[in-house]
Length: 346
Image 1 (tube, rainbow, N blue to C red):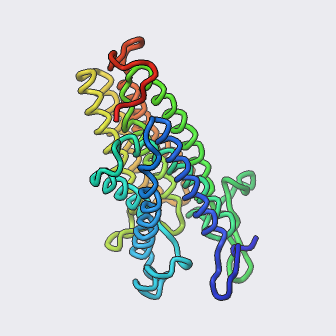
Image 2: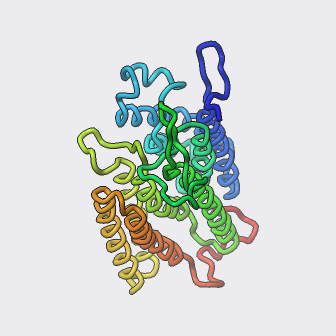
Image 3: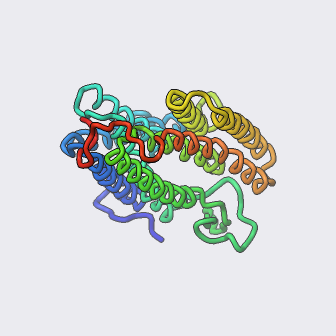
């Protein structure tokens, strides 16, 4: 399958670039629809979303250059020729989040939590669409070889060829990530719509909860998936722990802390708070140990990644429980003076 979608003189537009652009468009449309669902003016996003795309491209390339400098002839060429090279999702996320914060600080966006809630499912959708581009080149290859012929097919395995014509089946990291992101986008969209309906009808406070769930669920899953990558993003001073793993671990812990503070403020300190914190500490600790385990024993990846996935599912479950505790009792309105037909407060 050809990796080139269009060739114009000396410019080659690849299929991965095409799907990355489609992913950005899907993310912007999804964000716009979900932001409007909470009663906000879509004109607020007219300048925010294009600016977010531009800043995401710049920071995404900057992080990729930092982690993979040998793929470029120099810094200037990396930051001026966006048709060659790659982009790191860590930088893309940073660009989008920074744009949202700047827009809120400038008063362009009136409800930052609602914008973040809209960006969460939209971002997962953009990743799902964008990762489809890896099916057209050799970038979708994991660290370990697929030995079982039953899994030598998508989305589990991807065939990688070498210069001499030989090849092997490796774990299809990007295909699995795209599928997981698609499921996450569907789940978060459903949560967003349910919380929006409750906010409009019952006055339930929904702002920020979808974004916190995204940080927890995506962070937990990406810690595992990034460990399987063949060419991960490393800090230059560290050749063991991947940069996305550190950032996703911080995002997961931050989501747990934010949800815990809100839950304790609403319900006072309860037994389930201690349970959630114990699950988080145990799961993240075991997950960190299993990362060390698979780095030292590459031949035992099934055991290693299986235990790591189960371990990191625990803090993700804790985040879901904490999010559910923020719901008011059935039949009770937090804002009884708001009529049924009114939208969220400005």
